[in-house]
Image (tube, rainbow, N blue to C red; front, side, top):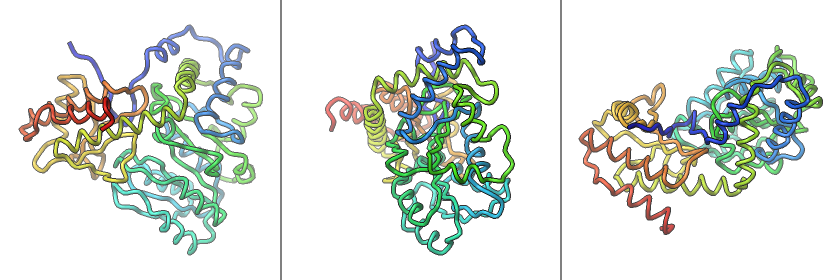
Length: 381
């Protein structure tokens, strides 16, 4: 018998309660019943972003749709933006800006590293006309984490808007929208929110609205102004994914019950155990000291076909890891540990990793990684 376990950067495993909420009978989206659910969810989402001054809009899209919405709403023709890149998803900001004719200044970082905030300041000093800083909290293509608080402080010093891709960061890492003075942030349903793919969430803080109102880039479906107007009436501009909205309401109830600080702490604990289990097997972390708590990226051992290991584990055991993307294909194994994940899931993941490596002929000592993980999770050392 095979059970499926998703240890990926997304989609992630979905709690039974959330699946049941999604399976409720369909209701019409222009009814008082749905309006109340949607209003309550929109208020709950403020807790996820840790904001009291911002509003959260629900988009029917993947995270990339929310990224495009940000570009379309916070920039105008002739504007210049700074983009921090350290992997595929930071680079996506550049691609999106290019689509809208926006000039970008790129602060490039070696894959697997977090950006030095001082480098951001150097570029802003030399380019005072920059209007927006685009940053990625957790770069899932490499497993690296950026210091968003420091980046925001520097950006504000030079009068720039701060827009953050926190698609995998929110619900995993500490994220304080108001305290860190972030203008716009986004996340997606299929990551730390524990939902299937299909929804994205954009938090727009009060300080960003002057720019949004004056923006002249083309926007229709992604228009924040429409979303704001409709939210006042507890609804959406266009037909929402009703079942996913109801499921997200249940997921937010679970997050609030656990407490956001406890959610962050759980992810840190599980990520640390995973990293230590990997190192106990003699493997090297791709992101080193810059590692995110979202996933553990492991450098492929020399001579080992890691993509073959990933495929065999998925097909034969139901345990799904992911490999590298684009230029990193064949160079890493990525083990996701966000959302609906607990201690025993991590033990299972490391057990599967050991099995896969052993069957591929890599000289791994069976049980060594599991023992290290179990020791950390049970005794804390």
